[in-house]
Image (cartoon, rainbow, N blue to C red; front, side):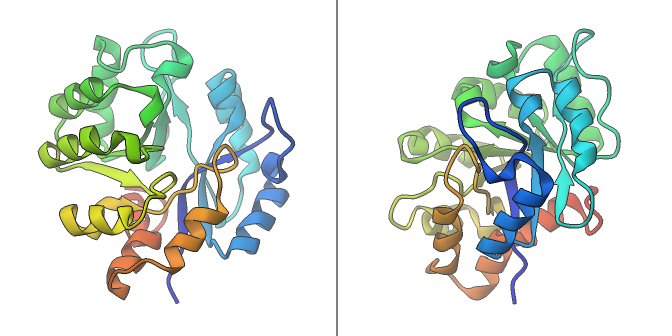
Length: 236
């Protein structure tokens, strides 16, 4: 039985929709429905509001099913520290800061030093910014989320060059797209993620059960890679 870890999920209310994952009980119910063991969660207030408030709200995410993921902003006007979290999210476009500015590069150096993995939405950066950020810190582990078929050429070019770039499955919905990435870069660089509730969770979960890959590769994508990046206890 494979372990399924959703690396890319939100907890909390959405400003434009009523969602079951507005509270921990509702989110755990969704995980049960889709047979997902664990979710790495950012709080919606941290993405759509003030990350300091949203990160504080992650105290609701208690227990082994929900792993809290803080949203960080670099610099003196940003968030302070990130504790011992093995996974963080950066939202430069949403919070109006440059991912290649001096404060961001200093934060990237600290994240690389502590072996902290970064979630970075494809719609929050440009390919050139990803290239500069990954080039400045080659050991920084970046999981690009929400990529989709329109980004495949740019994404493949980046992954050809930067060994510590990874991709989640939230929007890799095209025919055999996950299989293509696993075949070209190895299953170790593909991680199960849904992006829910902003994007669909049932589609990626259904896709996971029907991947045309060896069982060992599917197990890595489903949760093995996430557990490796986070460590057995959720730390690097």
